[in-house]
Length: 382
Image (cartoon, rainbow, N blue to C red; front, side, top):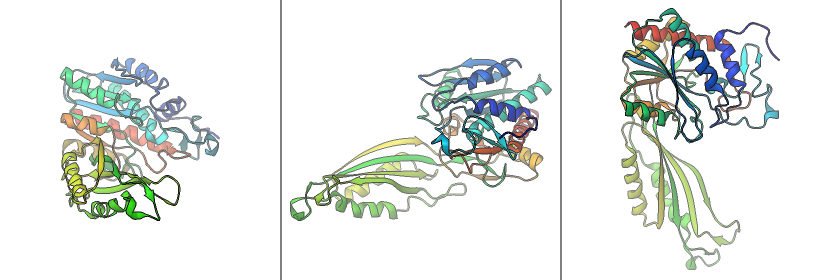
């Protein structure tokens, strides 16, 4: 069902984007729509395709500071479409809620930021500094040919981002209650411990790798990797998968596979965590193989000009200041922060992201557009 009220600019654009079935890494024409709108206002448009991924870099102005809105047009798969109350790509509105895959993560924010940039440029055509949008279709996927490649290209050209707002869904209970000023690092390990397969009735003729692993795994779980700091909680260690055996109940397995992950603070490094992990495994005399996948280092934007400008913009719009947090998973901000940019994240409620019946309040799209426009005003007139 559709509400009959007229859509605002941000809501109308969000609906157009949701109707494009851009399951990662497909963009499905979303960036064409955005580029056409921004080009009409004098933005310089550049397409930066890498592999199967579409990327858009749109800039208005040539001077500093360079203020960037960053987001992604790709979405995760819908899951069983028949379980959705509203068709996942119909972009229907019911009781003030816009339903659809990507409504909250993050086509809604992309639409709001585009509208904010449009309004700002119309009102301030000769604004100070530069405004740019960095849009990718590779955030929900491997995140190899998207924001990371674009940022690398910009750095090679000597283009440095000063301030960046990433439109990730950061809000918890009400729009604007939380701004992410950093994220923890992510380090995943695939551990294989080898034993000797045999009959369970003759344990002396085999070596059970699950038994061998047990004490080492207990030590890994019990280890305090750090105590965190003012902005980050302590580093966490979590086992996400463990598998052994042939399927028979009378066979000692020949090996056990374990996958575990560190979400780590700025008190640790990936190298340090790897070294300490091997020290523990070696102490227990295991025959093992260990492979690592590094998802990204932690980053932190210390409270300063960007956090203050955004907090003030939120307060001007909704009447309260956001909490500053570093919780949650990784985001594309991890590729922008290492260049020296101040990077923060603000977006709608995250309660339904990646879920059946993902939705966002239409009023929050307008609030996001207003906050983004106010942010530009504060950063270009400070």
